[in-house]
Length: 397
Image 1: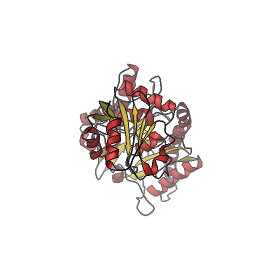
Image 2: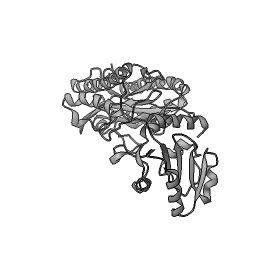
Image 3: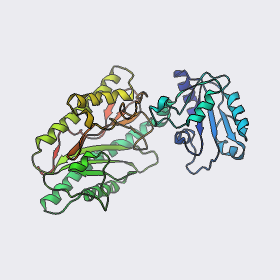
Image 4: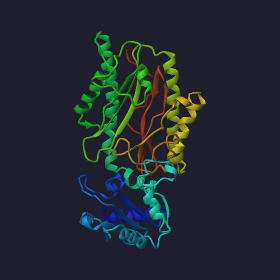
């Protein structure tokens, strides 16, 4: 937390009409607090702390006496407590001039990605006569926005992942045409090798799934559990990566293919619905920003879900439409979700997210198509990487 960030937060507090932002944590129960305040990962904190940023004036640090030194790097007035009575007095005094404040809270836990503060703490804060509202848009603004440098560094990463997906389909074709055995695990390891060769890094292993396995959205093979890939099989590949740097941001893509020269209608039909849903969501975002219209995460989910529901497959779309993308594959910004949660946070410039609708037919196959979206500072909506998938890849064609 520096003076520039502090000034930016206070400006946003004015925009959202908050009297302040009360950032709370106990033993890393609120990981967002640690990211916001800039703590080192190995910091040893064992007691509750509060950091109050008022709309105007100096922040206040409410910290336990035995570890108050850990907060000296943060700007603001320090108030030490030892027993819970003194903690309550510090809070009461700090909040006495506030009416409405932001915390990591979500009404009815509609958005658990933001709801980091326990109910009892919320009750305690409310007992001092203040109204607590969600800090969700503040979180997106200060933890999910990319820098221009991050966007520029992401461009070659996104392009490389699109190249690797074609290489992976080629790897399958080469093995099949040579009458050699090839498995989901083999393809997964091929992708990991390609990423390593490009000095890219990922926090998990690719999802490579064949036939009925592709109907399980988070299925992934292991060295012990996998299926063979044969002629006539349907294949889904989902993988993600970023530059191997502290500020690297992710690219995350999903493609589908068929091990043959001609793709059967049953696969093409479902894929077209999914592609149309993906494009409907992207177009909604693009048209909204072109019209300078504010939109929220749940509305993007609605745009994609409507296409699938209208086609009669609504019950087979069993996850949100997309997730925030930052230095984490699933970032802390706005998600495209009106299904698992209702994400009412705004979609902001200089943020990125996936659009990845899917249809999953249990015991048969599943189709998902995933693209990544970036919003520039001036509101231009970009689909990163190469040309998005338009048809199921005929792997042996």
